[in-house]
Length: 78
Image 1 (cartoon, helix red, strand yellow):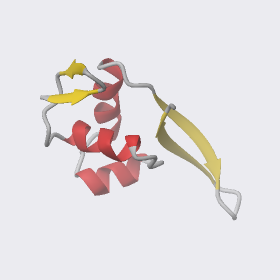
Image 2 (image 1 turned 90 degrees about the vertical axis):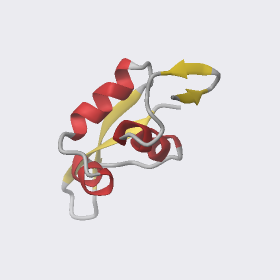
Image 3 (image 1 turned 90 degrees about the horizontal axis):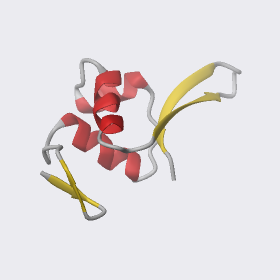
């Protein structure tokens, strides 16, 4: 189990949602494709769903790059 801010969280330490949680809590903004590549998650939305069901606030925001292409990225709310 991982203990987060003194709460008992039911996420195993080396699971994909746990690794995703560490990255997002360090300020990373990740697209679904980046989550799939970095954590070998077949379904990135499911990993985010697991974290959201544990009470973490993870938002999906839209950003634009220099060419004006819109990207959706997952970020952890402050």
